[in-house]
Length: 172
Image (cartoon, rainbow, N blue to C red; front, side, top):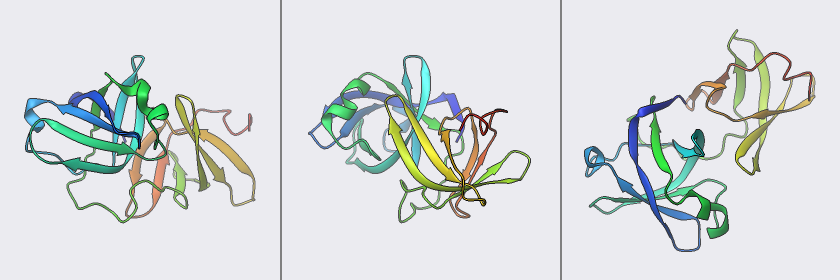
């Protein structure tokens, strides 16, 4: 999941309902041409933050309704109003998977090809998502789920490829 500022989907115009749905005013190039999306990046305080999409609804026009995984109340999403929404540069044009939000059970591989472990939980912190990784030795590690650390997400093989900074495992 690589953030690319050149692929602006639109801007969050309003909050729709109380269940965590946002209304995205689409850029002209995406009207009537909505790509298949698993995730997007919201620009929050100048930084790109990845969000997995749990539901989306498009009925034509210039508004796309999106609901983000783990953000299911008005209170959790009200701060997103006005944020720009970017697509990741690796948009897959295939059909959606059965569960586009749940990454539990995904293997985490490091940039050198070694296996870090398996994702056992997605933890929501204000402004940052964390994943709990269980190593083969049974140790639990917390790791930020941040676009700068993700090389790619391979949903077909249930693997997340990451480039983690040195010393991250030692602070856990």
